[in-house]
Length: 223
Ligand SMILES: NC(=O)c1ccc[n+]([C@@H]2O[C@H](COP(=O)([O-])OP(=O)(O)OC[C@H]3O[C@@H](n4cnc5c(N)ncnc54)[C@H](OP(=O)(O)O)[C@@H]3O)[C@@H](O)[C@H]2O)c1
Image 1 (cartoon, rainbow, N blue to C red):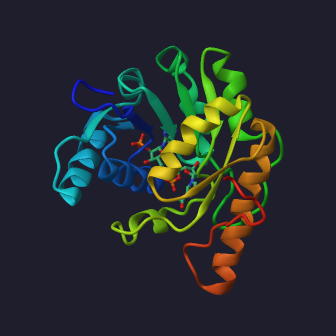
Image 2: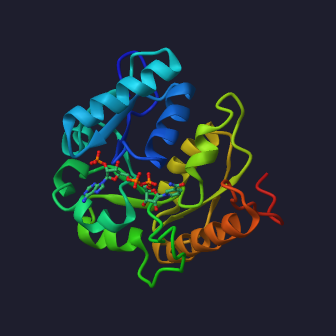
């Protein structure tokens, strides 16, 4: 949120890889103020510059992860899954009072298998404590789909797990701004199943030669 923009400022921590820039592009296009976070300031700024060029804007900023978290209203974690625990070490203070959206799916692309409980998001919540509200989301949204056809809404659904459904409502707004249908899918323990779905989706992509397999929910009328 800035003086000129009522939408919350989103920091994407580890936003220099594949998933983070895709989310950043789409949220920036919708109008959210975006900060790219990285372990290295120069890398964050280079990614921010690239995304600004792609959209013809100059509002996306790049900071080191801790500064990014401090300057945001809400943060999204998109570090490589093997660095998940390491990445949140040291962020507790800067994330205090905020929602951290954890997009981590601890699945190896080369050998996809469902991860063991607890979920990455539960691990993050345990580590970060009560002052941070962790919400698990976007683990099944492929980076390839985010980068493709930027002018079209994302025709897919997103499962949102949170211990407090009110926090899921906040994150649903982010998903809906991208054109997705968002569904509350229970507490953070359920998020391990959502991570596991990524293992299924990667296996399906490999079998069918696709890159953007994802999920859609039927049988629920939200109206
Ligand atoms: N790729 C997808 O299609 C997809 C889909 C859904 C969910 N996800 C999830 O999104 C997350 C990111 O996926 P990705 O494919 O974008 O990963 P990635 O490109 O391999 O890495 C993302 C970023 O992680 C940071 N990083 C690497 N090692 C780190 C460490 N030791 N400590 C802190 N940060 C570190 C790097 O940022 P800096 O070097 O700039 O710090 C890197 O740019 C993963 O948890 C994945 O499960 C990915």
